[in-house]
Amino acid sequence: MTTENNPPEITAEEAWEQYLAQHPPIKAHSYPMWIKIVAVIIIILSTYSLTLIPKYYGAARTFAHAKKEYSAENYAEAFNDMASVLNAGFYSKDTRVLMAKIMLKGFPEEEYENALDLLEGLSFKDREYKEIMDIMPARYFEEQKEDK
Image (cartoon, rainbow, N blue to C red; front, side):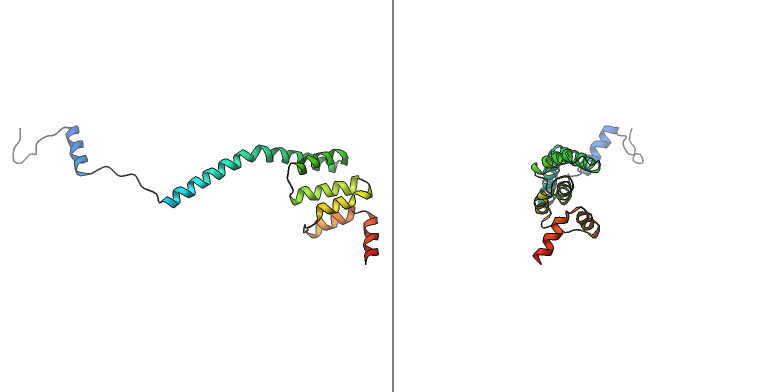
């Protein structure tokens, strides 16, 4: 029953249809192409770095074991561990310095040239330099005096 004062009664479905007719649905936001490209690059790089974890994890564990063996003065075991780390292609400053220390402390003085080759091109803090100089064979200093 409709009168001039009362609007016609409508159901909830009809009200919803009227609302949708007057208000179109919200469109999905469109991102600029450069944001999409950056997002894809980040996803690719993240995936790539995750694939490298096993390789680096194994080398890190071997390096930690070598440091432990070096501290325990088991130079042969430490040398073998560091050789595997270096052969795997990990030539960081820490790996090169530890291998040089192992070679200087645990092997005959004839091997110090190989140890110095590992240290070539590295820069050291005062404490690191002092550590290396403390374990350097006396023959090295004698040869340095002769060269001057």
